[in-house]
Image (tube, rainbow, N blue to C red; front, side, top):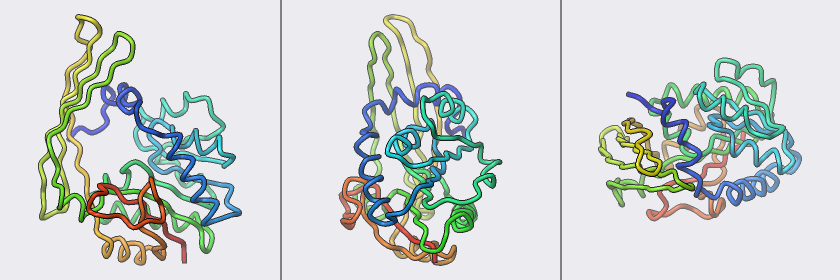
Length: 247
């Protein structure tokens, strides 16, 4: 299964150019200051191309981004920011942090418990008592109620065009969705690319999130959304924002 290959990564920031990163980062900064007023150091785990890390750094935090994908890591390191970026293999260079974040479906890509618990236990090892963990993930009640659908997205920047066609396969027994993306890009009358990727994502329910967090030494604080971090999600919210504290 190919996920976030070099061709997809090269188009990633264009594909999500409409994502309201600035507003989301501002809400995250507010949430961090409300939950952990003295927090200075933030780890952005699965930082991708580094946009959240760049913005949280601009909000005054000392940010380290950790990223397993070398193509995304290169783009993150090219950003104009004081944030630092490390490959996953060097994550233990982070000696400590006040906050660990994993944003934009990073946890939903952890489709087996061993990978998720490895992340949670690593976060636990880097946080002080009552340190803050924030991540978002697909919300089970919403996914099962709404059901994944075929979708398409078109983005235009100057003369360049991008079209992504999405076909999902809902694997209910595993609480996962296999997403097949066909991505086409062109400029005027010249085709630049046409390729396919598969992405497997997992959705979660509140009781299993609580169990997994407790297993790793965390206490669940709130389930909300990125738009309203302290308001419980509903079946209308595909994604939930999880806030927990280290015990």
